[in-house]
Image 1 (cartoon, one colour):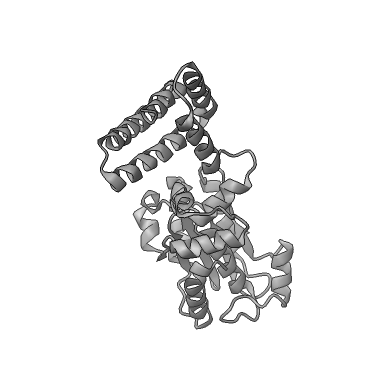
Image 2 (cartoon, one colour):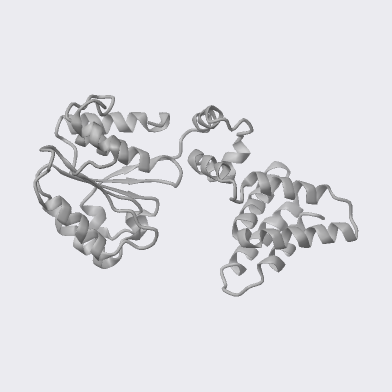
Length: 297
């Protein structure tokens, strides 16, 4: 378990062991802080025959089945897009019978905010009248998108961003030697977002942005600089929103450091660019040219 979630994890385990844990838990908080891992580990404890204050025992038959990925009483409703009513009904059907292993039944719903209205309504009855030894764990980083009726029937566990020191220590342990506060801030101070972005070889990362951005600002003025600007804008156009957000953050930090009016003007320019990027069919490369050009002067 991630160090910053350990206290929450142990608290929930203790309540489960004491039979005071609500049957429906909503884990909410920013992306990239470990909500899915917390849900999975909590689910494993609920299935374990001999759970302790530290987690599942890892030795019982239930633990072995779970580790093999085929525990008959553990269900996860994964969905890339919206979670439809058929998926929810399928999950509810699996929960309606007797637990095959004679213990608890666990249903995890990642990205619960992606449920359609019909799906959410189908889930309500189970939330209100669960079968014996049934636990539902909902996960969301957009709680405002959940129906009020769903929210009112769950016990809410709101998780916060970890302290910067804990995030940096974790990233250094993972071999990210250049982990810094600036790198964390680029990913919303969420350590798992940093780890994921830097581990995906084909992804556009903050490192890539800083290298290109730094080279652009260091280049001499003239035709070569203009060509470099156009090349960078075309290269980054598919990640235009992310690039502008990072430029905005850079301008904000510069303004806070010395109250430079030029930094404030760049910050406002980025805000305008982000609004324009919301419109379909806009020339993203052209918008990026305007944003990047502002940082050259």
